[in-house]
Image 1 (spheres, helix red, strand yellow):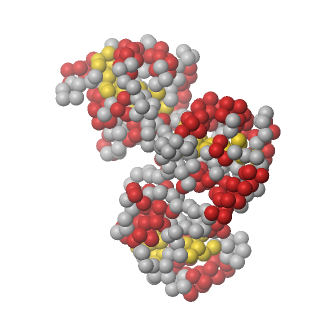
Image 2 (image 1 turned 30 degrees about the vertical axis):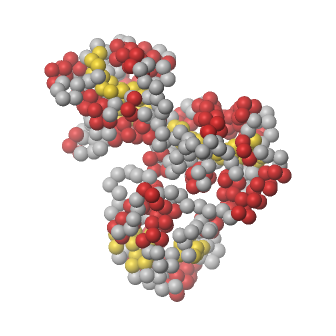
Image 3 (image 1 turned 120 degrees about the vertical axis):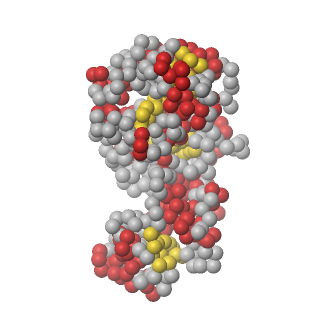
Length: 520
């Protein structure tokens, strides 16, 4: 994800010699990158191990007489090495207590952003061009590497036209992994219904994952877990008609080569690490506790267990049907889903001031039935709720999550479900971009669920909900439950599309309204 920034560096310093200092694995990954003159391997396990090894490396670097060190890595160690190497200009984010080692600091981004943007943001104070036309991932394989991969597949009697790669692993813990049992069921369905060939990828230490999937399958699969070097993995991924993967390194390799991919996200944040490709479809269950960024799930792993084989299968088939057509596949940049964004207090449950306990939660009559109808008509049901009670100290964020869990349980008792719950805990005076009627929560939901805003709806009992709809280009519906009755005399330049007695009547109107449009 640093390669767009490397491209921007080359554009900004066209006549300079650019040397990249990285570990051996990344050196292999970025081999043949057109923007680099030299790759220097930081051998932490060998020559550069320990304090003496770091001193040796700094001495080696000092001989090169570098003019500028751009420190993409946030660690203290990176700045110390540049200082010991006597590089006169040392530039980076002042993270990890290393600010005194830098000659020039870059301001950190003010808000959470994608990792690609995080690296590009670092370069902007240098006056470099970091516009969107340079924001693509840059990896390269040779013709020889590609041909070797093709020959190997031919030797296994595998048709690359319908070759589906499965990458069941992910570093930094098991919480990022969808289950091997479901991958096996998915692979068998793709073989039986699409005549796909299956290849299972995995890095060193992930051999057991590959074997676990193949042993649970009814049909044979090519298991390459732990058998491919980095360059071989890159070339093999390039041969795939589709890659199905967790949030992982191979996911970004596929994105760089514009290989169609389905990415399953659980505890990690798609806002920072989603695949940078229009040929990607990101699948995620935005449960209340995600993203938690934990290596192991301390509860029931709901962010992954709620992702069904059927959902992933449908996404995979969509991509396979489009492969080779020359069309961009439906992904995060071509949203198709219609959502009903719901306020919580006064719309779904009775408003009681600052609700600070699950025991105080009481559904408004007809609300669960209304949400069940949203589900039945294949619309997304998403809660957007301002919860400044957290910042005011009335209740904790953990208590808020308990309330939302109880809400989901109450709805489940009536066969209704939510596709997502998004909340803002900031005080109104904080000036955040997530509190309604600002678009932060809504924007996160759209990224997660691939929502078409222009055909979606916002339902609530306050003018802030109607203003949010107006700001987003969606249709706003005011319900007369909660505070709704008191809001009717305040409607002025931005009236709602409809005023309903309650959520149930609002949903009936929405269902009829959706029949008037055809989302392509």
